[in-house]
Length: 79
Image (cartoon, rainbow, N blue to C red; front, side):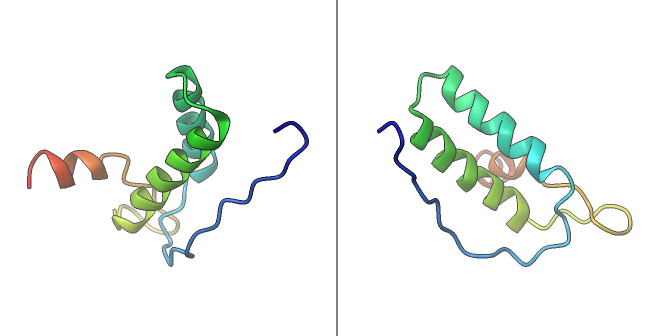
């Protein structure tokens, strides 16, 4: 697929808690690649993770707050 462009579409998340989105996305993509996933699969899963972390609505401090990196743990293990 060399030279082919892939678009990853998604709904806009209305959140002020966006501090760290770039670092989180790049780290999640790198983790997927380290697990042996393809680039497309790594980006798709990383985007889904980032969207969930923003939708979780962790409100800390003032201004743009951080993402909720533990949203999966809270929604799957403790519920």
